[in-house]
Every structure is written in C-alpha cells, then in structure tokens.
Length: 219
Image 1 (tube, rainbow, N blue to C red):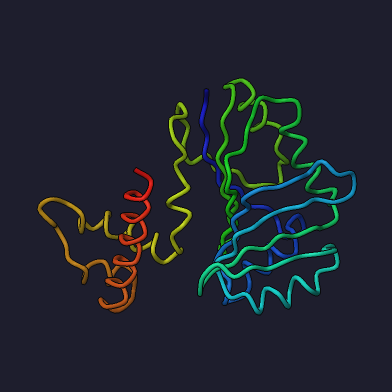
Image 2 (cartoon, rainbow, N blue to C red):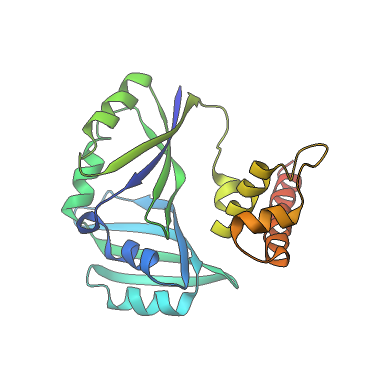
C-alpha cells in the first residue's frame, strides 16, 4: 500500500472563497478538513477545525454566497469547529474526478494553511497513485513531499501545532538545538526566526508540551 504526502497550490480563481479568507485575514492561521459528506447531488456537508479567531470567520462565512447553513463551536481560545453546508462547485467536482474509480483513500485532515498550501495524505495502490497525479488539473501546482509504504498517520500530531510552533521546531532541528550534545541554544533559534529569544522559547515549549501530552495520552 503506497503512501503519498502532497502539497497543492490552486490558482486564485479555483479556490473556495473561504479558503482565500483563511489566506488573507491576519486572524486566521489554517483550516483542517476533518470529515465530509459529498454524496448529495447539489450540496456538500463538511466539518472543519479552524485555527484562528471565530468572530471574523463567522462574519465571513455568514456573507459567503455558496454557504446555506453553518454552525460554529468553540474548541479553545485559538480554534473552533465549523460544520458547513454549501453548494457544490464545478471546480471541486473536476478536482475530485482525478480520484474517481481508483483505490485511493484520503487520510484526514486535509489542511489549508494561511500561505495558500493545501496539504493532504493519500494511501492506495501504486498504479492508481500515478494515475491520480497525472489527472490533477495542470493549473494546480503539486509538490510530492513524501512517498513510502504506509505505516502510521504522519501529519495528525504535526497538524495540531500552530505554524509558528512548527517553524520553531523545524528551525531548532536545523540549528542543532535538539542535538545531543546540544549544538545551539534558543538564541540561535530566535535569530533564524527573526524574533526575541523569549518568543522562540515560548513557541518551543508550547509545541513540546502539545507533542508530549499527545504521545503520553495515546499510549
């Protein structure tokens, strides 16, 4: 069973308006598509976890012309769930056509980030994976981040972190902060991130706390 992790970037005219909102509003960080029901003829039902402020999102979703109904549920101070019923779009149907009739499964969540990326994980037969890659619209920029045999979901815990927390961890690894013995301190992380050492330290501690808690609770 083949595993592929992809990053896709759609041209603006192909994006859902709420995806553009996530990209452009300072209070939004990312949207994680957790589950979906696409079986209806004219409407889709989707569940998102949104990382960002709920009030500006509520104003935007209330004004979105394709959305018929929605419910927002606070999760914590920085995130909430969004259950949305919206009209089907032809551009979405065209994208899904690449997966039709194949063995490919999508592993939730599909993550939409504020920098415009759509990140998704797929599993299925190798031949079908190649076919899907070939059938994706040529206007969509597709980057293959990882190809391997599937063992365990790889992005679930990573997706729980904020972008700044992920950036802090990536930077810390790059400069040797986690080497044994340690090659660089938090000051080096802060310099690479162009922030104060106290800010870098906070991002690292919060990320480490989330990861350790999740790992302990899942064992």
